Amino acid sequence: MKKLVFILGPILAIGAVVALGMLGIINIPGLTPAKPDWKATLLKIYGQKGSIKGDLVVLKDAPKADVDAFLAAAKTGGLDATSDKDGVKSKKLVEWLNKNLPAGKPKTPVVVKAPPLAPPKTEAKKPKGPTLAPEKGEETVAELWNGIEVTKLLEITKGYKDSELAKILLKMDADKVSEFLAALEGGRAAKLSRELQKQASVVPDPNTGA
Figure 1 (cartoon, rainbow, N blue to C red):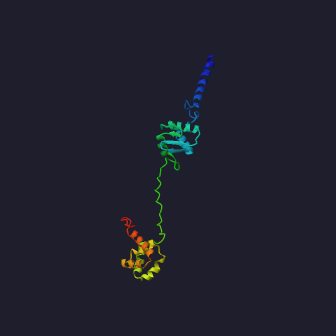
Figure 2 (cartoon, rainbow, N blue to C red):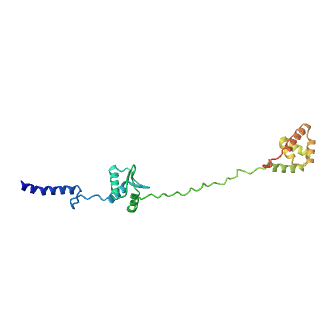
Figure 3 (cartoon, one colour):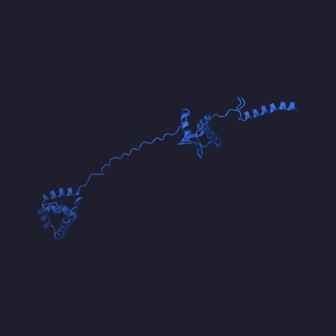
């Protein structure tokens, strides 16, 4: 019996050590499974699903197992990581990733301000047509009528309205206008005289000249 105990004791002890080594509790070269490298884990998961937003590492559409593994690896590396609804939050982790990401991997995004939009070009407005100056035309006609005989002037002005005719007569020589009114029939002369009085009494606006 004592011999059996003496033999089984070392066997059980060896078996326990082997079991502890296989579980990773005791490190036995060639027997204890290698622990995953936390650096490799961070780089692998980030390279597949990660992006950086401020102090947050966003793991878009990553399964929970990957998020948990990423968080555990960050904690193993002493990067003060905490879980966030969108991924893992840690300023140290972001700094570490920016230093260790291989070339070609996205790092912290740089916000580039778009150049200000140039103001739209405004085409010069083309004039719709010549600018009319009625007073200039009235002055020109008045000068012409001053040199026409009254008898001919009576024929010329038959088609004019009193308001139109009065504007020209006001710019003519007073003697010529008096001669012209005297040559008109009584009713037309009276109406035209009242129109002349009306237009002559209008005081122009000093701001607009109208």
